[in-house]
Length: 601
Image (cartoon, rainbow, N blue to C red; front, top):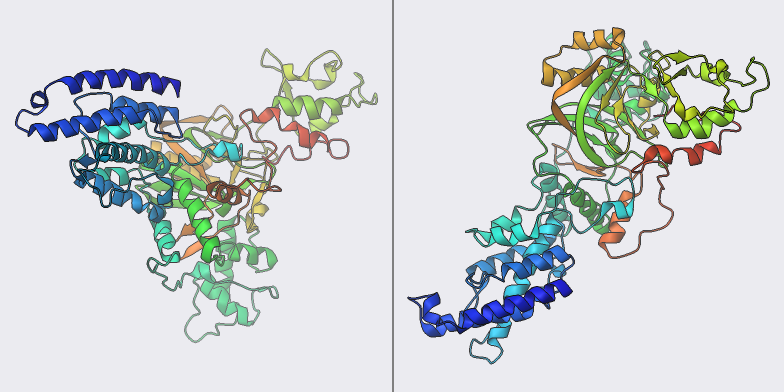
């Protein structure tokens, strides 16, 4: 590298001047021979630093600049080989595999059998010093997620990366009394990361992960069978009682579907947002079984699964805040955490495989009750405008605008007033000049509330009119946004934390508010949209979720140095400018189904 070569040459001159000074001046109380050897090693370090090859230019410059200061002591080697600090760091890096990294990826020195009197002793010590420093910088980067560039795998993988500054890494580790602990601190500190790490060690034969038997009601599966309803006697009724934690009264028959069980089913259906008929048919069975554990993999496939999920924890900040929202896309769940404890969770609907919900983080800024939905320019131009031009003269203008009325869309001009679409000559006016919006109401695609955290993907959390979809175990139906079940409860948790709102106040805002009813969050709440396909529960059991978008397979390939396999789900809409890409797929469908897919946000 030219810049490093120039710096190395300059550093060499500086060190040569330093080396020419009397040894006793550098260390008055030390033996001249030892000082001379230390100085000689530092000079050799400068001679070799330009030849060190690292993955990143900033890392190489940081390494060269650190050793450019003549009076800096060597970090890892002494007169007779590795010092205590060097041995501790090498031992820590050797355990990289236990943390989901690869110890073999770091070029570490081998000073076994080192002979201090050998002619090449100085060069070997200098080589060891540089290799360990380079490994320290690279290890810190890898521990914080630097092995993978997520957006090179998929445009919907867009996490904020928290890569350490290489100059700070080498500068801080030089003054730490325990350099191994400092290096270890770059690994994720999330409890789930540690739980997955223990699973990894156990699967590789290095330990035994605890596997307690879970007796949680949620783990009871109701198999296919007849409709269970009030008065029916069936063997599955006993299972249903366990699933809903509704034991039979003393002296009653546990196989009979009684009134108490009927009320328990209704309460469950109400919580899930389904039809509250008190009967257990196929739909309610899916809701009951939606969170049943999925059998996990074993062997290398399980190891691969653990590695990619551990890697994703490197994409999150070490401190996620004492209050935050976390969506796990493959699990179809959103949770609110306070002091690292989940205080609220519910089901969500996420993007389809070709309209994926992106992985990223931002901060929630406002909660909007009874929102308008504003039509993006891409939909106006590519899907609405062509349909308007099909007019057959039914209206006086000659343009068929009935589709706007069918979808409840209104048009607003530059002056902020609504305009009759029949009074516009669509052959001379660009539809993008007008604001098309869907006002609050029972047909509004955003429902009664949305949670805004402005981002480049134009994605947010919101209510939905299609509440029946929450009964599905796989809930990938949206256009990228996250639809929330029982959003009133989420709003109560968030606004209750931020502004002491009550459930009654939230209900009133949802029933009577307007789009102007924007409640700004006083202390912005971090929101993390994540993609974890392996999760260890509080009971120690690991659950596996479907690799909905193929991100696991992409990451496994890259971590193994292989090309990304073909045929994985392709996200055709989420991008840095999402509204510019939404049109291509749907415009091809407009001829036989106008607006198909528009209202699935």
